[in-house]
Length: 159
Image (tube, rainbow, N blue to C red):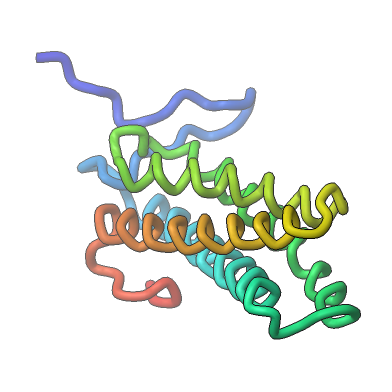
């Protein structure tokens, strides 16, 4: 039987190798780092889902909806950064990780389209709905992934 290495190749020259959090030799630093990524992602997803939900439900309009757009871009960028950091861990075998990465990809693209004003009318509302649904699915997958990789941590603010 061939043993699988527990480290990933460095994705960039000079970048340290990252040990899978599920690997037997994974240390506190790896778990803390993954937890920090998950915590930031949870906060970004909450803002994105809440913003989309407010607009889809028609609770805001006009100037108020424009001011909410300010929150979409930075939180989409934080979600995108978390997506790149998650890819550095060996999570390819996890269905929750695959679902999370797919949802984040759609979510970031939808937020970019909204912020750049590429949509109008019903397409805009449909894209906000798409954003909200993907944020909800991403949050569900994030909780499943946390339960798999960090089973002793109850919430994202704990550790």
